[in-house]
Image (tube, rainbow, N blue to C red; front, top):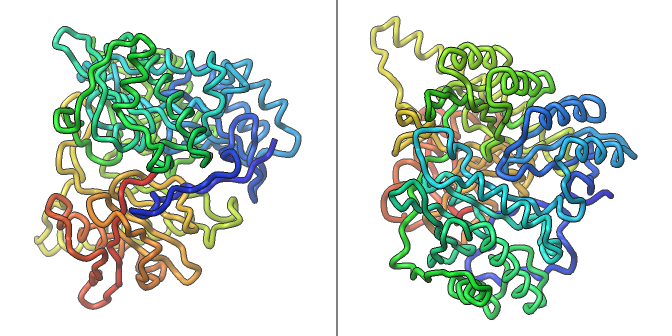
Length: 525
């Protein structure tokens, strides 16, 4: 079945009425394909981003035999196959079913489960949210009522470090340690700051009950809401409502008011840093990123081979379009990492490709105004060349000084230290901004005449969206300079009180000013 690709919208303006949905969502899946300009697209859900090397090999075979020879990684830790021909649906479904990637045809689009990718792989030792994710997936696939969830409804399981808690979950569970190696979790609903404290063994079941509570509220509202944030005021779901429902279901809970809820640690944007992650028992995990979220079949097969031969046989896809390969020894981790780098994968936090993302753009998307991936690569090449030339000049004159670091990894954690300043940059071919990051990021939007560069954040003016402001178009040769200016402007006041204006114009250089707008929004969905 084919479906129209839904947009990846920014949040609705503050005070606006929630949308009324007169149809089900059209998110693509493994069975319901999307018809794109470059062929059909299949999205394969990977709950918690996890798959075995055998499953990874099956995806490579499908991409090579049926698709365009690439795999795309999504902002929810899933994979996509593009360039699929007509009438390939049954063959693709058979491949995925044989590999165990399609446990339930009725539920395949609702298995949207994000979990902290590093859980159990580094020196951080919280409750095993990966185990919770597997149990929740099994419960979802066994639930008849869960089939009514939209393909956008999102479960988030955070191990307490705060890496995925802010990624826009409808049902978010944040692990709590009890000092004895175990613990429960705080359950949050949508944007409600209050929470429900539950015991560890009850976590998967409570997540499903919370989703069923949403379905009840959505049906009563008559608006066809796809997500918790879309429920109208009279039917809004909050933590107290869910707590009452859990008690009726026989689950022991404690309601935690907003003032008493423990704040989730604020992780730096961009997820685990690429490189080697030190784990328990002397084991290592490799963390690599896909340039612009796209891997060739050869790169994917290499990751699969390393996982099978030197790791524990598993891989984890992250919501930051990266891949973790766990279970290597200290002796093999370094050589394998460099082998992956030689294949074109990002292994260095200081790589200019780190935290650079883009939508599909032309020619794959008919709505795009530009080939944003080629433009991003061109702008990055210009910026890298200019930086190299400046460094060489400064070194020759003896005036070279180190540049500000983007954030070095915490010992054994694979996570950036506090204060990392390099914001994610996302290139978009149209206002849909498909696949844009959450939280604070630099928005590079194609306009047909150039690009508009804006710093997007969640700390001010919830009624402002980037496309509501009129920044001037920036020619492609100046985009890299504009991005740098927008990043400096965003970082200048990020930790401080909200500015009084929604936009500010910044000169990129004294001799060649580039107007940039700095609008802000609440965190994106």
